[in-house]
Amino acid sequence: MKKVYTILLATLCLVAVGCKQKAEPVVADTDNIYQFSVLDGALNTVPLSDYQGKVLLVVNTATQCGFTPQYEELQKLYDKYHDRGFEVLDFPCNQFGEQAPGSYDEIHSFCTGTYNITFPQMSKIDVNGDSADALYVWLKSKAPFGGFDTTDRIGAYLDHMFRSQDSLYDQNPDIKWNFTKFLIDRNGKVVGRFEPTAKMAEMEVTIVSVL
Image (cartoon, rainbow, N blue to C red):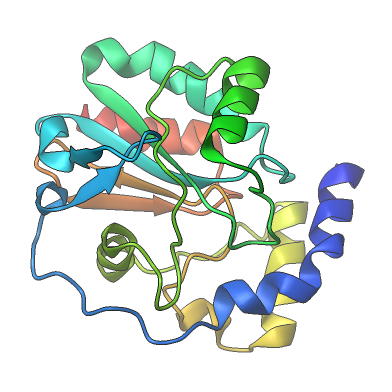
């Protein structure tokens, strides 16, 4: 727990960078995720229509974050429900405290070597600001910020820190930190957003409900 606080404190000066960005691109006029394409680690185009009929968990990640151990929990969910049509789509992002440094190959090697992940890991992207990937602009339009779990010590800490910078920060749909998750149902619609402090067990209940 102390390690998490240390990391958050060390990167507090960069929080504003992740929260206060230039205007983003126009939101795509679509109700499902299948109109978007992303790049995989080799920079090949991956149409998300390839995942049509699957339940997707889309998550922005980092390798040097206090929440990085969530990779292990995500892999457990993937192992448990993949045969039922569940996919985790991992998007490394370096916008929050520069906690996802290095090349894609370095990130992927760390994640497979340390947490044995087997779910798809895409190319690094931005999720906020004028360089935000179109997918994330759309995701945020469908599921705005849901608030940190302030019954959790880290959630209360994050809420206090963000609010000290911007009293209305919670009205901004931007991604606040690493390991924010969006749940997509089999019809390609966003059915939930889970902030980094959300309990995995509670998120799992929602996942099961749409499988």
